[in-house]
Image (cartoon, rainbow, N blue to C red):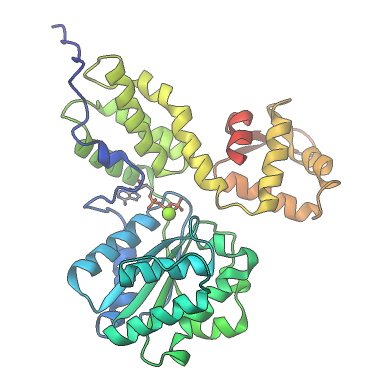
Length: 374
Ligand SMILES: Nc1ncnc2c1ncn2[C@@H]1O[C@H](COP(=O)(O)OP(=O)(O)OP(=O)(O)O)[C@@H](O)[C@H]1O
Ligand SMILES: [Mg+2]
């Protein structure tokens, strides 16, 4: 039987939205425990007390942002006593920017952007909270962006000691960090530590079985029936696990679907997934690089430049050749290389024989890495 090709006005997508980066699914599988813990942390806020502070940790693509947003929207639906404010610190990474977002959520409009100090904005926040008798919880997503210029201490100090200035305010904070090597507490002043003391909620990477379930659910929601054969889904899962980031899989589904549609096919094929792969993995690259410190970006850039000449590089030789020009020792370089491996950016294998030297391969096209770093 020949299958009629897709007409120009037909589509494989039942709902495009479900493949977008900021889509929050109705069901968030395999994160029940983390969301329960989060609710437990925030529960005092619902009865008018200060919520417990939380540190949410896990590598990119483990559902941290999605789970926090989900819990926040459930709070918004069920109570007005506790007001959750979500801040993307990649966008708002100054005290003024963060307080403006909080003020916006509480008052419905942004403060003037000129001539106002963050202290003045916080004054207004304090007054609104006292007046309304509401409790505030602020999620600082990608809080590693606040580590520069000491913003983290300024923000946490003002939020968590607000009751010293406005006695009737109660504020809790959730910090979200994707970089497991960042020791947030070591970057926090003593005077903030005494009021912060967060409980940690860890988001482990998804197993292959879990990733398959999540991706298959998403495909079912987004595509019409029989568009994605099981073998093709398995390939998507395989590529996702390889990249170590669920968002690669979701983006692969979308791009592969668009590719099949352009070819006027009613079913997605393995070839569509392969064609989509490079663009989708670059999402992981971007998500990972944006968590990096400056020195890690410098080292990755040097590695990408060297990888343009040779695909396999000896770890020892690389460290020696770049070490002379970098202001930190070999131990730090080795540490960063291990981190690149943990983040699925490089592969390391042992060369047999005496000395067992280690060989380093970049898992991405070096030019793509250099472009992303820019
Ligand atoms: N348990 C889940 N069920 C359904 N979809 C999920 C789940 N976990 C993650 N996702 C999806 O995977 C993608 C990445 O998730 P999310 O943005 O929450 O990760 P993250 O941990 O915040 O990553 P990053 O550290 O890079 O910010 C999103 O598109 C999200 O919808
Ligand atoms: Mg996130």
